[in-house]
Length: 83
Image 1 (cartoon, rainbow, N blue to C red):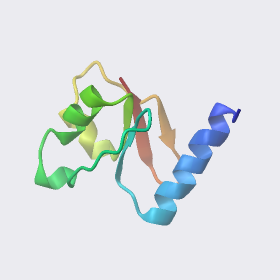
Image 2: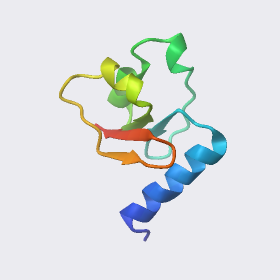
Image 3: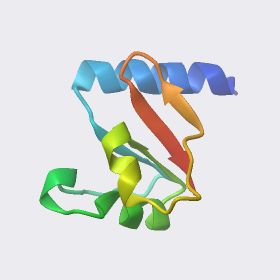
Image 4: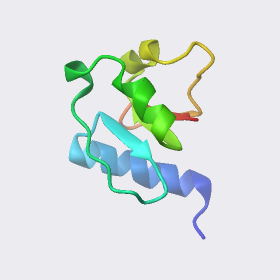
């Protein structure tokens, strides 16, 4: 078992290393998705289909106002939003 803080620290480091700006938190299903700029509202659709999403702060505007970030990943600046 990995402590939660260590898990998100590893995800943050990986996001920086890969130059990621969007991701999903899921149970292992393989998912492909386009760039957020190509499909407005993508963040909301991804959040409805997965346990959570990892997005840039600009994508928060496309979510319901009741959705707030669970945590910020400090190195990448991405936000984790859970369903």
